[in-house]
Image (cartoon, rainbow, N blue to C red; front, side, top):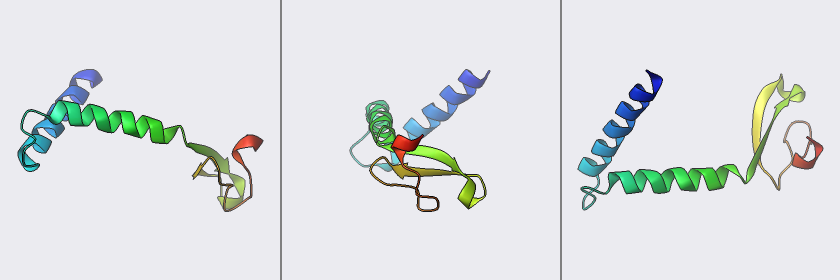
Length: 77
């Protein structure tokens, strides 16, 4: 059931994109795929941890940066 709902929402997003972005009729699926690929690449540049110094909140930083609250680094995980 969840897969069907997800596909429905993706189809709606594609249709919305194709209607709202001039010159992109029929190109929504390709645009969505390119967006997902770019988001996956960006995700690889970030790290996360639950920071006790910030009340146990999930914090996310680029891999080159340390946590603003506790100073923990990606290498420390």
